Picture 1 (cartoon, rainbow, N blue to C red):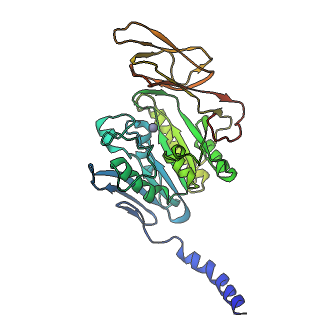
Picture 2: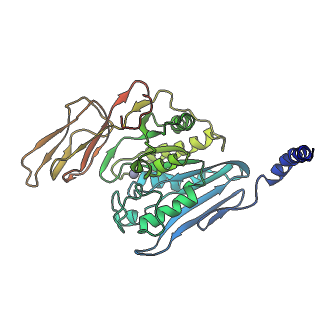
Picture 3: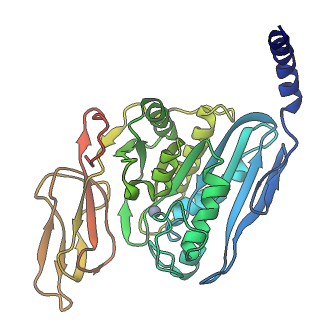
Length: 361
Ligand SMILES: [Zn+2]
């Protein structure tokens, strides 16, 4: 009897207390950026020095006045993928926290040393990839310490993680997004809707093997392993910041917020995307001077010329041909090549998305 009475009281009180608690006046703090409802806060996640130098990761928090999910936008794991970094600096000014439901966390530039020193792919401080070391290590080198804080303060608190990339200084890339799949139907369906909402009409299907440590070391793989919804998108080529590429990423981010019912915005999801596999990376068999024969975004057949590789005297030219038919998602846009360097990536085109499989398509 008492149990029943207690239950009745609880049922009566819960909606009232929930209504009073929303929106909470507590700030949402990431590093030194703490935003109360209706506010935008700018700050940083400070990574103290240890075995190597300290760093400071810029961060923006936009807290809405209505309840809703926490969405994290991250760019600049690769600090010379400028288009994605610039896009995220332009996102907060497009948001009105007084009209927003939920919370938006924006980290435009994780790899500050890469940006400042124009070092491609890696953090020059410890020569580690900042999209390859999740969940980080508080006792490790700078990359690991930084990612441990990003994991704790951003990723774990987010319902949805958007990871932006773009054509690095050495990559002639065509814009695309990823539908990252875990093999879990509900999570995968949600991520599919988000990839379509983002709006880029080329979507690479990437199946994450949650049992494989290498599959969950990236931001997207780690986020998926925690059950988050994930979108990855890339735009920009060869380090160039073209307005249309920036706009495509900013619009995609706003579309993600719109489809998550956090902002009011009309958008058109990609209706007929080109579904792509992860594809085959073409690697250099020797060091040399590479000259691309096609641009990123070219459809090629098997055996078609992608470029040539000569030795450092300009002789011994070797034809680099496509191992398969598909879309050149990116191709090396600079002459530097070394044994094992990625020269191009050719992704197969699917008529329909194939079923999830833990090995690459
Ligand atoms: Zn990248």
